[in-house]
Image 1 (tube, rainbow, N blue to C red):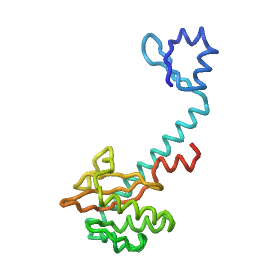
Image 2: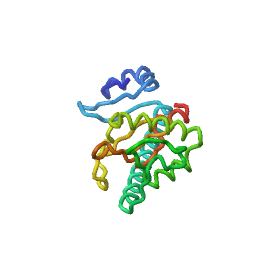
Image 3: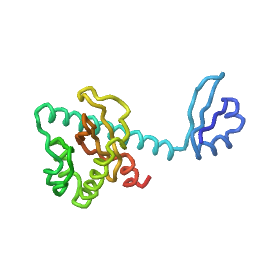
Image 4: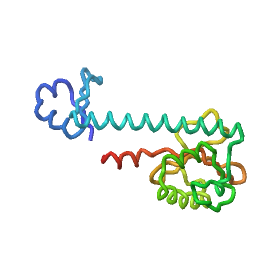
Length: 182
């Protein structure tokens, strides 16, 4: 839990403030304004690693959407039931861009793809369960949603008459944390 102390309190209670910094972030104020932040090196390293993972995730997410946009513009979209990586999944009104299909084939093993096929069946039944991504992506005309399913987030949109288009699969932050042991 974050704690706030004044610069005077820091000087007078250095030992206590250091102990607090081992447990969380200590914000030090000077003349009523934020001046410094103290934390243990371990906590600082964890925060830096988490920020890196978020940055990588964000870059992969936008790269996936950019590839998807090009696929859609060039008509490279396949019915999910025709995607060999998903074992001929039989669902109606669900499509996938070629870049999403390629990522699925290259980055996920057969067991993971089988799990994703099951998740896609559920997603087709309740397409609005996913969360909207936090920002609009300029290139696509529909809001993009993401649905967390180990081992990845499924990026998709729900179009007119319930048609679902899968734009990509991005290894989720939750899965990365599990793999990193955090």
